[in-house]
Image 1: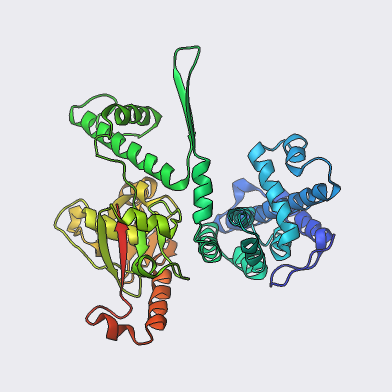
Image 2: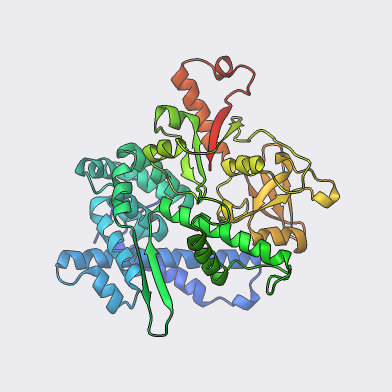
Length: 452
């Protein structure tokens, strides 16, 4: 089987060349003395290991495609039985195999190992969302080369976001797929022989986030009350919001009708241009956890919502709303949520993060946006008790250092790129300079909405 590609990085070598490179990396890994590796050696080994994983994923997709050509057993059946994969993993192989025929450049990247399985799966999922209209699928498949280029160069999260924008521009902003997903929502509860009750549900992105937020709010209320009275195991030494607390929260929500924190809420973030004029290349319309929201759904929710306005400059920085309190205010959290979808050091959702003072409160650090950043609990603990440190420049580029002061990572502000894109779009659409439109606001400043 020969595969060719129109983009750099995928060589027309077929499976023979792929197998040769697989052997090369496997030999390198086989000769490793893991216990004797230094940091650079470990990083090199990780790269080779990941290359082996990618190449094996490409071979699996090729085998799945061949099984499809034979027309007998399905690829999913073979990989779940002979390959001993889970049903979900076997279906993923079948989806990747299907792409080899309709998007040859993405398929070639998958086989050659230049596109990781996670990005290939994202392409398959995006294509599935467009299944309701053949013209949408044709428009998506016609972008095979550009999709393959992006898939080979972008990290999974950024690539998923890019695909989400592409799907929105091709389709009716995802409304058809959202309606279909709502039709798939399911919930069930049953009684066991042991006298216990069990249940499960399967919800679309918006409904699931609403339920999750409601449970989290109720669980926080339960934990806070228990800590106030010194109830075990909430003795102040650290509380884990695990399944037991979530179960108590669920019972509390049902019993009270609306829970301790009022009706269930959802955080949405959108730029003003999208709300007023529709979807465009730099559209920002997502939930706090990063799920894309169709424009019609966003406008419906705007009819009954608390709206927080945040003005942002072209660099993506929100204006400061400083306070003399130790804890970040709701307005500050809203501004941070606009700038960050996740922990500043990893991909933990913003809503699961804690707000960290760059200059600690005990050392005179102010609770102002220029001194605040979201960190997951693990990275927050590292900053306070693990000897790690973090600094931030005026453009909110952070530098994270290990206890020995060596640089672990340098991360620019996540919202900087999209903000620059929106600034350029506004300037083009208005046909005159941003300064003349926004007056005293910074050039390219933008308003974003955080909706609760």
